[in-house]
Amino acid sequence: MTHVAIVGGGPAGLSAALFASKNGLDATVFDTDETWMHKAHLFNYLGVGSIGGDAFMSVARQQVDDFGVDRRQGEEVTGVAADGDGFTVTTADDEYGADYLVLATGADRSLAEDLGCETDEDGVVSVGVEMETSVDDAYATGAMVRAEEWQAVISAGDGAAAALNILTKEKGDHYHDFDVPADATEAFGGMVDDDA
Image (cartoon, rainbow, N blue to C red; front, side, top):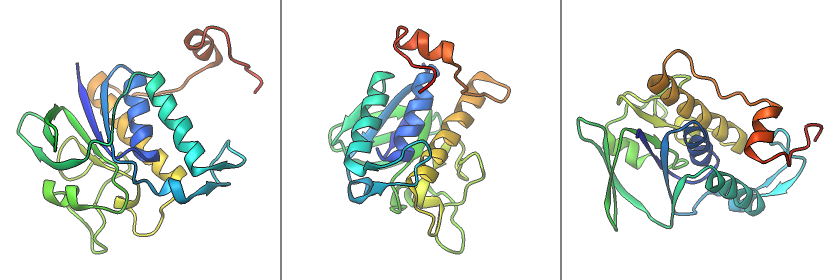
């Protein structure tokens, strides 16, 4: 099965993991829990009136867990490398192979630099709208690709864009993840309020 390794468990990383796993890819998230969300309170996240960062993270983690993401909580990534056949992700505990790599480490661009990703004059990682870096099949998201636009909702969108591009490469055409009420009813056994 196609494997997507995601380094970082904030909104961008968890969004990428959710979209990948929900659509049949094997996703592993390495999360040291250093997300800025623990200092946040969200009033500007579309669809959410008000939620504390810790509560948001709890809900987001539960959501990816429910979709079968392999979440390596507390396992710090110490290195990433392109190995000609994908990527090797190294932690203090082990090495993991992956077909695709999503970097979601906030403003910490060190792993992207180690991988050889191109940056712009501001030092941010260069990506297109699909979030792919200059290294094939490696993606960068959130604060590492933006000089100042560090918002949870933007980061989550970046993670989703990366996952959708990976899904397009794997499944062909332009892959879409668009649910309808029947999908939710099927997934959650009829326990969904379509009017909510």
